[in-house]
Image (cartoon, rainbow, N blue to C red; front, side, top):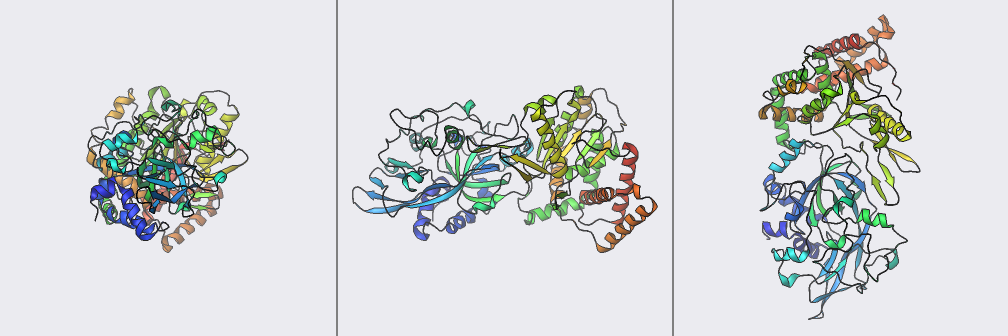
Length: 631
């Protein structure tokens, strides 16, 4: 039985043995083999993560994991799933697997038979993945602390990478010199021109230790991060199972084989004396987008994957896990103290306004749980008006506080310049055959804070009008329109939007509250720094678990309370139809649901229903009748 070093450092050897036993079409045996060995947390912690370890500190073809969001999905890719090689000494032939590889290889005394009838062409799905947009620093640190770092591994910024040839890797003990593959063929070079068979072996062999021809500097490679300023490692993930189960914006953890062979990159320059390969099938921009330098965008051949329902490193990824259930039980036993501490902290952030603190808490735990026709249910976009002028950095301080509590967040300054110049909605680039990311391409459970205090008078250009409409649709309908040039397609999303403004926001909102300050500090930074002593590591850990747990709870209403609420609605309408519209009733139902979840309960009580009505009455008296939003 192979040791730990065998199946983590040389997984391709294990896979070849499994394929020899079970056949090329059976992926179940491979998944079961690695799944069984990685079912324990200790074993999983031994697998290096592309999120934490610098790429040049990882061995090629080793087992790695990667936590990411699917940013784009490329067309299916054809490759040599199985190919025949001839041993030049014994003249015997054998079949090798091309699965989980980018390059079909053979040893020095073997030759690949390109024209063999036994060769099998297969297909796989390529996903372009990026680190989870807006992921909080404490989340990254939490996942990094759970991994056992490899010797010499670096946790520095993985965006700046060094490049090296595979011969250098072998010198470090990846394989013995007798195993060096001398005849290498790119398994992806299959297409209509040659009937789905790999490229001819008359192609000049590549120098494996020299940089690829025409290598582009890192600054010329667009990594397509949705949020500006992010520099995490992007990756091309190639999947072999359940291809149709993945969709854009899913947050997934992949475990697979790292591939960084420099021959996989395709660049603007072509070798001297060689014609351009299949110019009628793909453009130069498409080749550059789909085959970036592996030193900057490595390839990962996924063996195992799991979609993450949340991104909190302090909780198991599966809500049925006993540890998750235990964490929920613990939170419920301490909920009175946890909720009281949290409300006190939020109340401090809104200058002692207890009403705004209650609504802010409900907003932070809100989430779309279902859709009735076009209407998203469960969300509560919130506008807090009466915020200090932008010169006092109030929005930045609020974002700093919120990012320390939730797993993903982003602060967006709403200015005329940003609206006119930035790209909010993703758009299809047909010349490169890729999806150009936009700022609103965010994963579920992301907290978006819009700073409307930055808005000044100005003129929106056509792009600005599109952007403001896209932002309004995100807030109102929880959807983002992707521009495919000839048509648009709506993608549902689950992003919380908090708008901070001086007056009532021009953007849509589910709820509007106006600050009534009990404190009026001169220095906001010093005022917010008073929270540092209260936010201990122990309390922060509990609050972070609390926010994740409340989003995972299942909510239901008993028949008795449902009848009481309906009778209450009828009575209110009888007295004064204008004081209780259908929209008002819907807002009340949403509020009582969020108050219930904020108490770590799954069913509301009469007291919570009464509390929801009191809060809504007080809020309406404060802000007056809602106005119609122009967006």
